[in-house]
Length: 234
Image 1 (cartoon, rainbow, N blue to C red):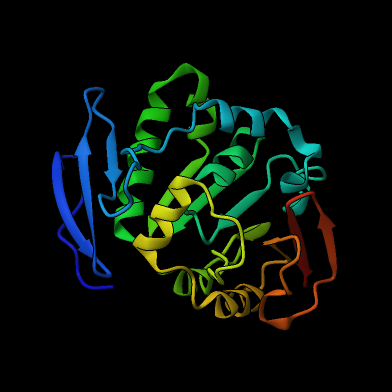
Image 2: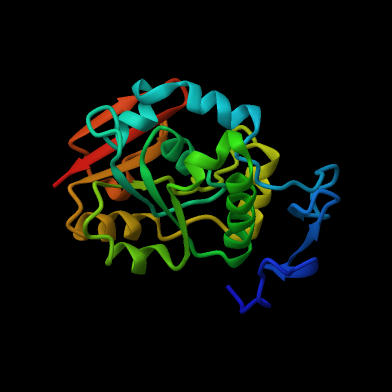
């Protein structure tokens, strides 16, 4: 993507044109960094909120849920996990709340700024502070980061699925995310880099009917009602 102005904790207001779309970054009355996409009519600005009921429901699923099992938390609750496609950070925060030490890697500078803001607020709230202490955020191209991911217990990938015009519309947040990032066209390459890293377990989240990433057959798959986790073992 084209170079963007620095986005840091001091950013109060910024208008960005990315991939031909205009986005507004603003601090709201609570000091949260929010993003709005005026080209999507009726979509209100939003901030990443890891204390939301949706995230708390995910955490309540415990280590027996497929996400936790996919990265091996049912066997090693304090596993170190490299989340190579951090996105909105919900899965990564859920894993941290369940005991994992999580590194969130995000290459899009706007998303990285929103993640840092969510992390800052999570550290300040009693409900989320403990989990937030187990999260580290890096703003770096995932493929390059994966090459240096040795030493982690698991790598987690949740690449954005291409819009084929046949699927139901994603959530409003995910539609904004798709327009902001353009998706993960190099998703196959991310799997190659993850498997070449030497990390013993790579978990890939996919839509339930989607083909294997890169046409690479996993060692095992965990099927859910809406998503599937493909597990690649060294």
